[in-house]
Image (cartoon, rainbow, N blue to C red):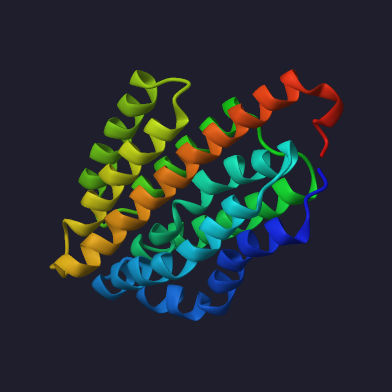
Length: 213
């Protein structure tokens, strides 16, 4: 898939931030400080996610944004869950968007599977086994009950995971709120990217000769 630099560069920034803060991930993942770092760095990348969405013009670029956003939506958990699951999640959040840019965008079913897998991985990184089990059960029920509705699957799973990972520490309400705001913002961007794709498809059908412009 050929994607312009104006779209790919904002979406690459979160991966660069993970790489530059990997020592922080090693030191604080799964702790109260890790949850705070996850919330803070997630808010930092939000303008770049908005930029990627806003700058996407043609069908391939919109498809890329739709496939990458739910993956980057797990950004806070890179810092918030315990190692080594945080390291694995960091690698996937870096690798999946890069591969999507380099090759083909992920289709709806594949993206749905990836989001489910990342949710389960975040559950496995919870502080104790009971929370992990509860998280996996709840996430599985969400994905079963809302099949083919990726945006709903993402936001409900994200809310479950953020509440569970924050429940074992005395988290400042401001930090907790930042995490909630990030999840809602990703949900909104993803929702509007779906609308943008539908509008693009409709315009292409009405004016096939100008669909590439």
